[in-house]
Length: 219
Image 1 (tube, rainbow, N blue to C red):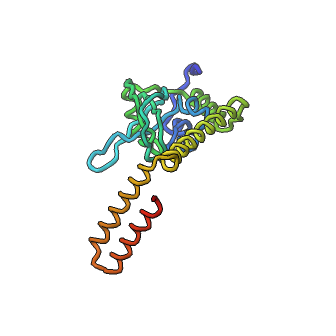
Image 2: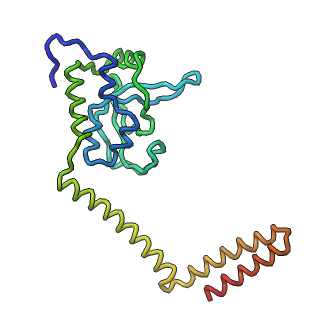
């Protein structure tokens, strides 16, 4: 959206309207419109500490990068293969993890640093247009194609889980007796170790009895 003629730049409070916080990322990260929802939004990211205080930078999300090695996002408690590219002033910062996105509002000082470093200064009409786009995704109505894609994705995951279960079943019960014996030996060694470390005669006898039961089950 092109700015209106002689329209003043937006203020810090205006940018709050299109600021994306970590809670929003957590809410929409699995949605089919996630990429479009994120792009054009502004985030406040943690870049380190100065004298024991957290230091943040403000940036605009320009892209979502895919095809990266899987990693666990601790803030979202999920495995991901994508990250953000953020423009802070004149600098592009690639592969930014979502877990460093702040939940707090952009401060006047953080916004001042952003603008002084050459960050894009939007007008109120441009802010309004981006906010309208975000709200459109928040009230998104799923198409049949999107529903089909989500179902296929979930079924694909379930199929992988079932495949792993089948392989484990074949390994344990499909004639691989050596595996069963290996599990028995490891369990028995553990039980014997516990019995040796125990000073209780009853515990020692119980542990040795458990070893006998394991060998009988796999014989």
